[in-house]
Length: 414
Image (cartoon, rainbow, N blue to C red; front, side, top):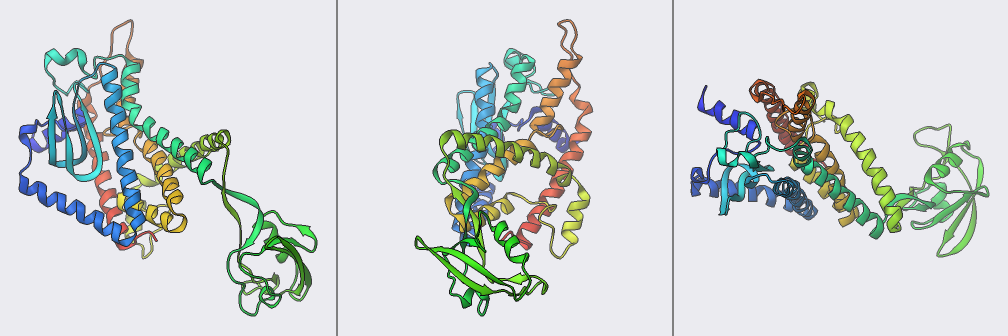
C-alpha cells in the first residue's frame, strides 16, 4: 500500500488530518497558498463588494459548523485534537493544551479531528475511553450531526431575523408600476407613471400582478377599459383603448411593467412560523437536488454546453459567492442574508449524504452498528470495507469541484 493511499485512507477513517503539528508545511509554501486565497477573495470583492459580505458570512457558517462538532464532542467526553479552517497545507497553526487549531490553504471547508473515529483510527490506549467509537450511539449521533444541525439553526435565525426586521417577500395586495410605461403604449398615452398603484380594471379591484395580467389579456386589441390608479394617495380613473400585444397580437396590451410583491415586515411569531415553513421547503428542495449534483452526466453536459443550465450545472463556493453578490446588488443586506440562509440549509443537507467522507456517512455507520448490536455486545463496522466506496465518492467530488470552478469562472452567475 502506497504512503499516499495509506494517508488518504487514514484521513477518511479519522475524519481529519492524522499528521502532527511537526509535519507543518514550509513558510514559503504557506505564504504562496495564502496569497492565492487572498487573490481569490480580492477578485470576488472587486467584481461586487456584496460578494465579500457573503464570503464572510459563509466563513462564519463554516466555522460554526465545526464548532458544533467541537462543542458537542467536548461535552460528551470525547477528545478533540484538531480544529482547522480549510484543508491541505497549514498556513498558520497554534497548540493550546491538547488542541491544535489554525488555517489551511484550500478554503473548501473545515474539519475537527476527534480521536478514535473508527476501527482504522489508531489512538493512544490511554485515550480510548475518550474516543468517538467508545461512546454510546446517541452521543455519537449527536456529535456527527451537530454540524448540519448548526447550519439549520443558522438558517432559522437568518430567516427569522430578516422576516421580522426587513420583511418577508410576499404579495402586498397592491399592484405598483415599477418602470416607466412603454413609449406610445396605452399606459403612456393616458399618463400613467412609475410609482402609480393600479387599483382596478373596469371597476374590479386588483390584489396581485397576476390579477392585472388576467384582466388585460382577457380583452382583445381595440377594446376600451377603465384603469383605476392611486397616485400620491389620490384615486383617479382613466379610460383607454388597448393595442395588440407584441408577443401575441390576439390579446390586449396596456404597456406597463408592474410588481405586486415586496418585503412585508412580520411579527416575531409570524416570522418564526414562516421561517420553519420556508426552511422545511428548502430542505425538501435540497434533497431533490442531490441526485442532480451527483450525476456525472449533468457535469459533463454542463461543461460541453455553450450556456450551462443553472438548475443542473455544478458550482463551488465561487459560484455561490457570485450569486450572493448578485442578491446583494438587487436587495442589499437582506438579499445576502436570505441567500446565506438557503445556502446553509443546502450545505446542512448535503453534508448528511449517507456515504463517507461526509458526516452522513459516519452517521449511517453509527446507525448500522446500533442495529447490528445484540444483548449489550456492540457491533463494530469494518471501515476498511468502506474505503473503496469513499474513494469513488471523493473522486466524483473532485471532478464536480473542478468542473464547477471552471464554469463559475467561464460562465459566472450574474
